[in-house]
Image 1 (cartoon, rainbow over the protein chains, first blue to last red):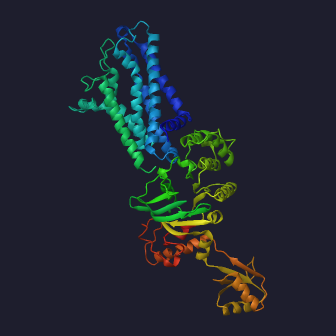
Image 2 (tube, chains in turn yellow, red; image 1 turned 90 degrees about the vertical axis):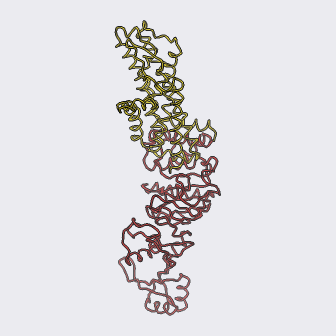
Image 3 (tube, chains in turn blue, yellow; image 1 turned 30 degrees about the vertical axis):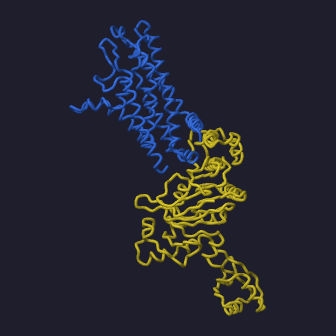
Length: 257
Length: 343
């Protein structure tokens, strides 16, 4: 079966149910909504330093929703048994699941891009006097790079879905990891902060925020002394995602469906 | 044509399928019979490449399932009618299946028509009744017009109309020359549906034979005979070397004789030579249930002779012994479950 066929199959599967549409709409709306609130709430000096990087703060909201969608794209197949129907139709499991990953990740990427551009536009509309025009490479990266972070995060979500196979378990694991573990690990004395710099979502965030500075307080949006620059961070993030995906695919191939 | 050779599946310490070998021929409905938990579904999943056999091998027209190109064109399977996303319409479900195997989209309308779901095609499958889900599952199985069809417990939970529909449907598919392999724990259903049987219990093959042979070999041939002079008839038959039993009159039936191990020809001939009048001469076929219990009865005896009676918990291979007396076809082995479980 050709790659295009498999991509078409997964596209039909994804779009013939309603929940992905809702996830996409909610992800874009919530992200832009938060940015609108932030833009409206800013006062005083912060407005003088309201730069493009600050308009992308809310990307994590939409990102979580799209990761949930990506997990569900896998786990609902296990829950309803359609994964078995899929493996009957396409016994080459790895290529089928790769096609699913590509479709889901590209969709997440597009949603991330739409949300990011929407955030930037609405911030400009609400605060036309702030320095929000895209001037440096870092400005372009922080706005247009959000889609890439969404895309890679969706690959991680698919991988976790393949490993755990149950919706609740996979979503809990993913959210606990990205929201709790990656943020709280720094409270471990001595080594916590060193470990945190290598955690995938922290590094993924560094791709967007490396070298940024905004608001009157000089907020950077990332940790100091990160091991990689922006593009190195992106590559590291992608490598982690692909490694997890390889494990997920390996498990799916060898386990009984 | 499906060929299983030494198929074995082990889950931890449990042997779900144990060295199973059988053939399923085209042009006939072959029943896959055994009580719940005998390993029927596991075997079907191994045939379809969903589960990996611990040992052994199963081939469809000489190939492993995973090696089939566009498998839906060769094999159609209905293992579980609920393997559909509840929020997807019947048509969308069939559409992705069709696209995956390069089947033309007009085939979707054909199979929907074939199973009578044309009107419901755009409704979400989650709202379907079991009967409709079953029909959708069959539509999916027929999508690629395959030569081999597998159905796992297709009549479970269906109303009489649905059962009849599926039974006739399977006969039609076999008559078209397809290989039809259908599992059931319902012996009576298999007696009506299947021409051949693969009988398993506790993951082991008990018999592979035609349905008629299975019943005859297991229940023996008995003839019911009745006439005005029962006492003389009895003497004549006993003198002819036959084993005769009295069947006393009941509310519904007058008194008669039951002759074991003889055909109606023999009984009629003996009576005729003696000049005796007969009112009734009927061959009595045993039911599949009787056959089944007789086939597996050896183990029940074996167990009551001192082994702990723990139905369903014994490790196959330990609690089962070979029973040469039950040999029907090749490789017959007595396998233990109680009468209650197989009913």
